[in-house]
Image (cartoon, rainbow, N blue to C red; front, top):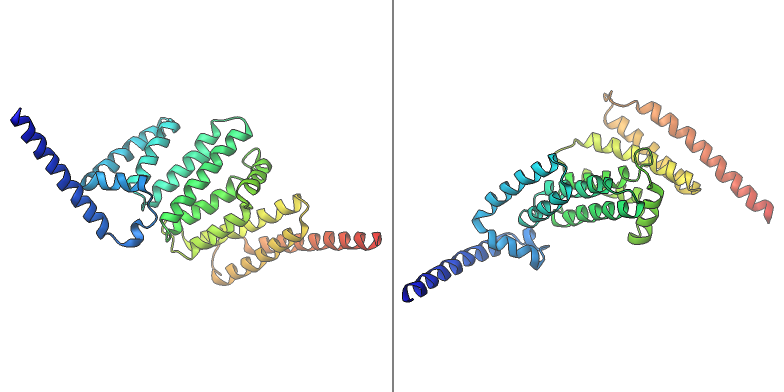
Length: 276
């Protein structure tokens, strides 16, 4: 009996020693590294201690396996664990956000359930952006999701999703997309070059203009078109040797759209004056 008590005390002292080391290590990390942690996120960081790297590697192997097997709900649980153990690693936030907004959303048929998972993915990526305030790559992926997931060329129920986003989050998806993409340019992304992101911004402005025109918001559409023309011209000056895109062709198309929208706005103004 005495021997068991001694063993128990030794084990308890060892545990206290390990936890103390973890706490001191955590306290000595830079403030910015943990200022956004919640209590539930701090506990796994403390308890895993020096084993955290091994645990995270093991979880990543499982996550990749579950992704290959298309077991997306199991992947959801694993990615959540990784994000708690490795919150300052942008890839896990991107991976999990895409898993929810694309893979799991695709598993559902109703627009309500699809939107639930799209929204969850967007919110998860935004949470990751808060914990990684200098990650240009995470910012770009979030901006791209706000643009791509609401593109009616690729997905159904985009009008419903746009309406829900405005109702629940008070956001326009294209405004959000442009905000995060522009923020990405300012934060030195590593996975994509700046020129590619700037081209994507110009294309997003075009999609935003078409969407606004379709919704009868001709003033907003014209504003997006004028901004796109300006930014394509700046792109042409900055990258004169770029042969990946036909910049002049895009500008010409935008100029034609600008004239058409200006005509619609003038006609609408004339109609209002006639009523008076």
